Amino acid sequence: METVENKVVMRFPSKAANIGFARTAVALFASQLEFTLDELDEIKIAVSEAVSNAVIHGYKGTEGEITVTCRLTNDRLEITVKDEGRGIADVEQALEPAFTTEPEERMGLGLVFVREYMDKLEIDSEPGRGTSLFMIKSPTQARVHS
Ligand SMILES: Nc1ncnc2c1ncn2[C@@H]1O[C@H](COP(=O)(O)OP(=O)(O)OP(=O)(O)O)[C@@H](O)[C@H]1O
Ligand SMILES: [Mg+2]
Image (cartoon, rainbow, N blue to C red; front, side, top):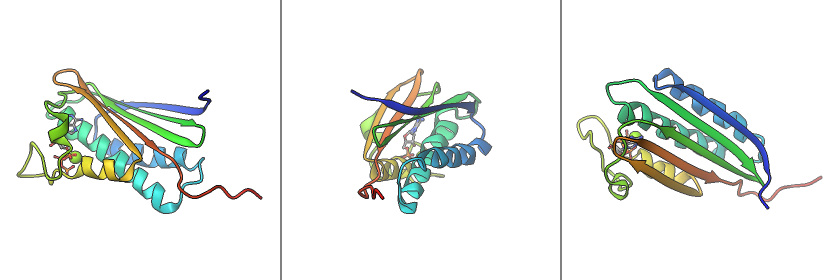
């Protein structure tokens, strides 16, 4: 059975200043597990891409709430980044490298990085309702018990 060992929920307005907050806060939470520094960097990038997308695309031109939930269960980290913004019309297309709805300004690579750096990525989105990214990552190094 799954044991939830720890859980933190953060809810904040979609201000750019909070991207860095979420990124660092999740990395601190993640450091309860034995991630390498490289893995912690990957988690930071994934979180900032997910939260940036909520700010830039989800709440484009408006402000709304973003909820980031971190859970620690049996040596794995689960992160959910949720907005109640515009939603994504075609999730498969959004995941394609270089696909962006803002070709003048963006590269369309954020979700590619998230998928690359996390062990699992699930996107649940509905136009007009919002978007939720569910991510899982576990430390790859075998635990060293002394
Ligand atoms: N939270 C979200 N709400 C609404 N649309 C989103 C959200 N996240 C992603 N999208 C859509 O998916 C597309 C691809 O996202 P992705 O992060 O890969 O690229 P990008 O944000 O356009 O560019 P980059 O991340 O390289 O700056 C976005 O252009 C946007 O249309
Ligand atoms: Mg992006």
